[in-house]
Image (cartoon, rainbow, N blue to C red):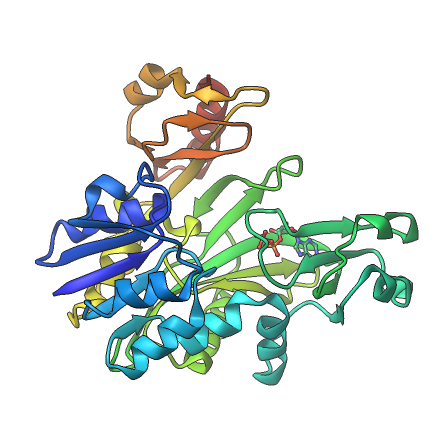
Length: 372
Ligand code: ADP
């Protein structure tokens, strides 16, 4: 079966690693021939995933298509779908999720609890909503990994806001940030992964480390699972979805955002769960039974991120020390060049002892540096 991936970044790379266990002919569409997934697929096609012709011509030769990022050309996917190419997830789900305004409205329409918000179209609109501050301003389209999100504490911050369609979201008193990954196949059968707990670096606005399964009461975890399932059922699309949620100080569970694809919050599933999120997506695409989402052992993940003030050919300082650590798994994404804040890889740690998971995550963070 010929299956294409739109985007050739690290998620595409890990998806292709999992594909090696199946009989599947893989295609990748990506602008950059040196991308992390480029040399792992059977057929690399150079082209822009946002361009109609590039996506359409790429897709029309394939039985199925999936994405590793949502900033893709939807019109091309809709046309391909109408011509019989299977798209995971459906273009209608990607279309909703791709735009944060549409995404938030979808939550409201489907009675999914989400932080309060108003839609703004310009900085001028922000001035009319000063009473909404402190709030988080999120650009409707094009934001990624913390870019496209700014905190507006008071009216003196309004200049930092976006002069484009965006949502202004009430600041939530967050107790924990979690993510729940849900798989749904063509028969509408579902499988839910244990929640992951994320701890963010306030400086870079990128993931600092994460621990799975999340340490929360059974009742909160049940609530989160129910919401995640309800949401994926509402999207009514086969595929894999990561639902990012906030647990607030009153233990309310609010949906922050959804990713309609394999997700960073599921990297640990490669070693720490019976069926990884990547394997799961292949099972869905190839119409095989869903896999077992249970954790084999608790785990933590540290992202390997380009060090401050370091740009150029990447070198990994402290890699030998980390490779010597027990039950520790290093994944480098094969990116030749590093720059500050760039995601260069991740490390998964497994242990039954939660303290050890956090301690080792911190130790790795201190030991392993990406320099130029
Ligand atoms: P991105 O799409 O760039 O990942 P998010 O919407 O997930 O952006 O926001 C990034 C981070 O900003 C979140 O993980 C959270 O820590 C913080 N954040 C986002 N929205 C809120 C909110 N309403 N209240 C408090 N913190 C928020």
